[in-house]
Image (cartoon, rainbow, N blue to C red; front, side, top):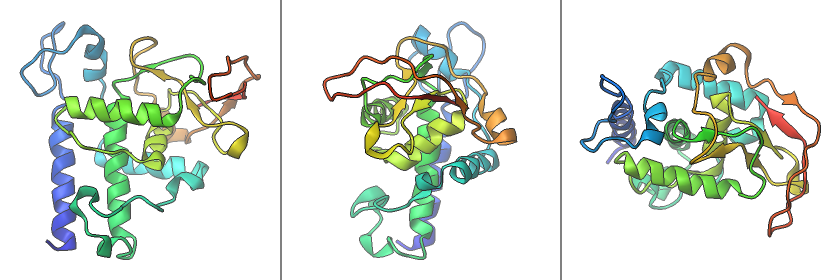
Length: 224
């Protein structure tokens, strides 16, 4: 299969998933493109309005302009990922950029189903939320997706209503995200503010956080 055919196949898979996010009326019972009804906690996420493809591209650029380290493509495509052969990994970077854009979009979709908390969850690493997001995507018919760190975090910052801590702090503190599967506020269209102003950070005073079994310590909270 040629490079263009592979990119076209990736685009079609993402389009099929986005189509499942459009909830039919009337409320309160809504569905997301499949027969079984959504549980009550998922209704708000189903009503979330996704950005257009052009808006997603702008959102990704906004976040990467503010945090260039998140645009790193290293390790994004490995042998077997999305049936893309290793020989295409360095094909002018186009394949890796295409996979990054796809994973960013899928992560953005999954994160719309998370609740927002007032503070970052210092007890859990980002890898925990990556696994949770993969489970959400599997429920939407997109099983087998392994979301990589940079596209996932880029999507979190692009949402505009997810607080975070530890980004760019190196070994001093791991990155933490203010999301939850069961408690907190539903996703809003805060990504529109990111489009207009970029991921402008508001620095709060250091807040006390309970160290977890990995010994994470209190850090400065950053909110988009």
